[in-house]
Each structure stands twice: as C-alpha cells, then as structure tokens.
Image 1 (cartoon, chains in turn yellow, orange):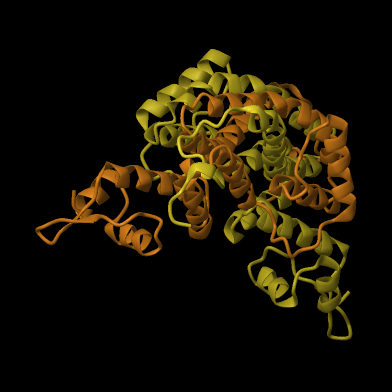
Image 2: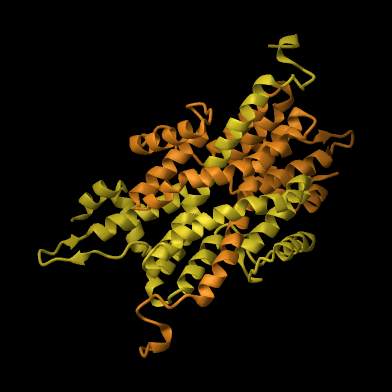
Length: 225
Length: 225
C-alpha cells in the first residue's frame, strides 16, 4: 500500500510516518516499478507498536528506537536477547549513570536482595531504579514506604511469575523479546491502573464511614466565599 | 535563607528555582527589611518534592502543578482530598478524553470490574487507563496479556492493601493526600523496579539451563566477525 493508506490503517499522520522513516524507527518501503513506494502489513504492525510505546508507555523517540533495535536483532542472539530487552526496558526510567548513587539507599536495596536471595547483576538498571526511588522517598520523609519494601516484594513475586509464564509460552525468541518489551511497558500501565482501581474499591468504605478527621469542615467555614 | 543557599540545599539550580517561582509551583519567599527575599525549610521540602515528581515520576510541569494544587488545598476538603489526589495522579497517564474509547476493551474492563465486584466510578481515570492499555494490547496482538487480567487483579489486591494501610496510618488529611501522591507516583517506580528484579531472579535458571531455542546459535555462526 502507499503511504496515505498506511497512515489511514495505522492511525499515524503521514508527516509522523515520514519522521519515523528518517529516524529509522520504521524500515523503508519497497520501490515498485511504477516509481512508487510500497508498504506492507509489517509496517502497519510496526507503526502500532511505536504508537503504543510512545503514546501509552510515554517513551521518548530515542528510547523507542533503542528497544526496536533490540527487537530487530532478537532472533540472532538466542536467550541473550530476552535479557537484553529486559535491561533496555528498565533503563528508560533509571537516572543517568553519571549521577552518584545514594549509599544508604544502595545498602537498603542490597540488603533486601540478600534477604530474598534474589540473584541480580550489580549493573541491573532495575536495581539502580529501585535505589533512586528509595533515596527520593527517604529524602521526602516517606521512610514508611521504604519500610514496606519487603511486603511489596512478597506481593510482587506472583506478578513476576505471571509475566514469566507469558514469556516462556512464546515459541520464538523474537516473540519472547517482544513479550518482554510490551509486557513490561504496557504491563506497567496495566498494573498501575489495576492498583489504583483496587485502591479506589478498597478505600470506598473508608471514605463513606470514617469520621471527619479534619479540623476545618466545610460546613462550619464562615470565611470568604 | 537566600536563593543561592536554597539552591545548594535542594540541589536545584537557581534558574530552575526562578522558573518554579514564576510558574507558581513554589510559593514566593518573604521580603525581609533588608530588601532581600528569604526562603525557609518549607521551600527546601517543596523543591525536593517537585524534583522527585518530575525527575523520578517523569511528570510534566503542568501535571506537577496540578498535583501540588491538590496537595495545597488538602486540609480544607476532608476525605474528599484523598480521593481527589488519587484521581489527579491517575490522570497523568490517561489519554486525552477527547479520543474515543475502544468499545471492546471497555467491555473487557467493565466485565472484569463486575466479576471482582469492584465499585469504581465510571469517570475514574484509572478505568480509562486500563481500557486504553487493553485496547493497545489487543491491537498489537497481545491478547494473552489481556487474558491474564484476572490473575494480575488477584495479585494486585495485596499491593493495594499495603498502600491503603500506609495512607490511613497518617494523622492528618494533608499527610494522607501527600502519601497518595508520593505512594502512587514513586510507588509505581518502586513496584516496576521490584517486578523487573523478581523477573530477573526468576528467569535466571531458565536462561542458564534451557536448550538453545533459536536456529542460529552464535557458536555455529561462521559469518563476519
């Protein structure tokens, strides 16, 4: 199909498609004998993937480009690709490595990993991401959230087990790699939404039946309005 | 303290502080009799919060501004504030409401909510976020992830219970509201990191012992190198 039809089918404007082609996020079309450029179903699929990673996952163009490169080289490197995709996906949220690691938060995280017996590479971007989150929480005075780390880790293991099962059910390395990328990025959105829905449901009885805790109920407010 | 000292203590450059003052993310300092402007510990705390929301949470200036407004009005509206903060936090990731909702994904999500008996307001931004994620997953051919929604929902309930306990342990509405904001935004990072660490740990034995599944093992590769 031609670029206008590609735009219609993928829901991505022509100008944006041209930008993705220049940035090599999208492979070039095939030149036909009529001096036209032809695109196929692979292009439609790829455009939908780019759209999902950027619009829903909130990834930058360069982060998307890096992930697609991992995906495109997937069937060459066997199982390594799956781990590589996992690291590439984690990195999108980790702070630049030039910034110093908070030593106390590093100890908190490494003690957690040791307590759980989790075997993690020291360069794991997820380890770095957790250290940064703990350091920020401590600095903001939310040490109670850091203290709940073990409880959160207990609760997260069944989720990781579901993730892993979805990945190993795939029959090719390329499909596994794509499942890791999509499952982590769109999966984070899905889990964040489920978490907030479960919170809303669980807090509803509290909101309805709890006594007014504040000292300035609206009704008694005789101030300016 | 003066603005230079505020910058040193918070780790935020003076120019950025001035930008936050203009955008009203940061309340103005107090003019002293010596014609200087004085900032206090409250400004340091607020700057660290802004930094965490933007740098770690990845929030935009306008999203940060909206959350801080909810936070600043927190002790006026009693329990409503807590729910308001929850909705404001969710909205940061939901697609603009002008875009049409995918009807099939909407049915999938509402059927899930009905099966679980979760009481959710139809305008809940988290419901919208889940619908968008499911629609994208379906379009990308990852219906197996959508099919795991019930399993993920089972696994998320203990996490929401930890969240709620951290919130109700607070003694003021303002503290609860801040816990909701920080717990959701930095909590999403913390949970995403834990999920990836649990995945890495669980997939290590697979990576070490599984047979090579690909058709081009590296060792047999006699191509260019």
